[in-house]
Length: 94
Image (spheres, rainbow, N blue to C red):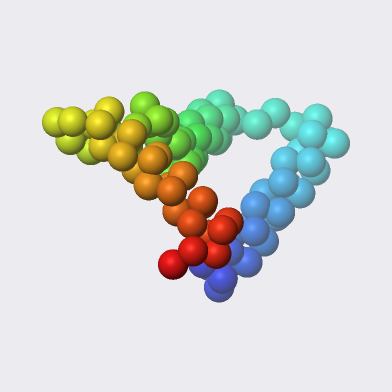
């Protein structure tokens, strides 16, 4: 949620929590249709969270992940270039 939208939603959640606590204190049963609605909303929220926070793990070779025909050779060249660059920087060469 973005700034201004988060605060009213948080207040609404707090109000609902207080209402559920009050009902529990008075031993009032929650209607089944409300329980079903809460379960549906929870499942939707979990799905939305999984979709937006999923992590894609690669093969460790970005060239293979991108479909390059000579992915292993490309990765080897990139690794070699990184090592050469480190040596050049370490010895202050230009």
